[in-house]
Image (cartoon, rainbow, N blue to C red; front, side, top):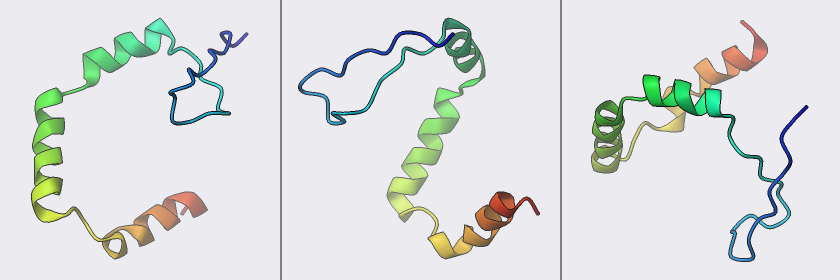
Length: 68
């Protein structure tokens, strides 16, 4: 059974969306596998270079969606 939804606060930028709390097991897994240093390095690189153009990876995404 899914957890009870939380009502968004009036200042929430996504009114009308139902927000569910994150399961503690998922949070524990994320804390074990998330590498903040690598994330920040990649984020700085994207900010400096503007990231990758969509054209450079859209074919790969479409192939994944098609299952090929």
